[in-house]
Image (tube, rainbow, N blue to C red; front, side, top):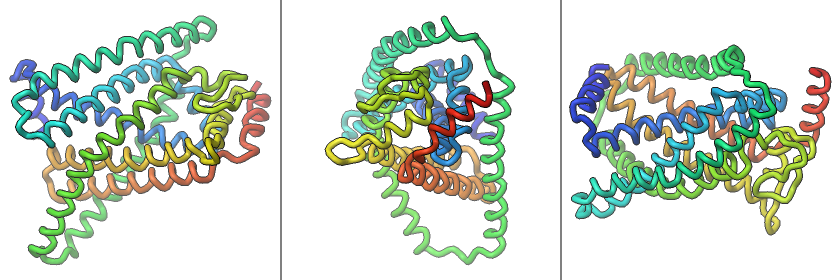
Amino acid sequence: MATLALTIAETLRYRGKLGQWSWVLHRITGLGTLLFFYLHVIDTSWAVFYPELYARAIALYQSPLFTAGEFGLVACVVYHGLNGFRIVLFDSRPKWWRYQGRAAQMVFGGTLLILIPTFLIMFREVLDHYSHTPFDLKLGELIADNAQFAVGAVALIIIGVILSLAYSVIQPKRDSTGKLKRNRFDQAMWSYMRVSGVLIIPLVFGHLAMMHVIQGVFKLTAANWTAVGTTSINASGSAVEFVQQRWNFMLGGVLIWRIYDIALLGFVVLHGFYGLHYVVNDYLHNRILNRGVQIAIIMTAVILLVLGGGAILAGVPAGAVKLIQQTSQVVK
């Protein structure tokens, strides 16, 4: 906590020095994106395993507070992607670091250049939606539904700390060989973070464009709309059918969007949670707590890979759309 307080104090003391603000914003936007990703992977898996819960989650995504958060998400992804590319470029060309200030300005400019037209398109969809939909914050539902994600995260941290305590009791003596292996692993992951950071950009930007601009969250539940990236019609107007149509779409005999989403899932999980590992190391110096949180990070990454990957490979069951239709009729 002392390190975190020092970081905040030094950031304010620099009074807006561009390099410092770029570093701070890169971390904030990365953490914000990772938080949404954590929620998104779990609730998208519900389209396969618990269709009713997925339909409810999308209804909450279309609420005013989540709509405002969607604008923040898009800003986080765009800035983090562009600034990450700047970091990779300058790490590969150390002699160019004298131009990093100008490059940081270009990142801010590029972010605004992308966000302004994107936000205009998104805001038009928001106005259109709320012109015929009651403005309901759904605050109680948002708190109740998202509390379970917070409880799950806290539970994983508690388990991680307990395992860390147990390890501290039985751990063997350290040797130089183990330290050497860790150094090699860290070097490999440093390279992975740079390579994946570049590969993720077209994947994430493409997903963002399809789901938040071209189709938009409000159109996921629009009847008789073509699911983005496919030629299939979402006849029922349910989010579950949208996911089903998208994952079942074949291009040249290949389930193109399943491959796309698995690649996106794998790259983002490893990149995002290893980035979180760096952040934890910077601010949590107690050995037992640090190791406990790192264990929780690993467990969360594995859970998301298994849950998300399993859902994509399994696909939405054939009877899921009919089940949603029956459930909505009962509610009405």
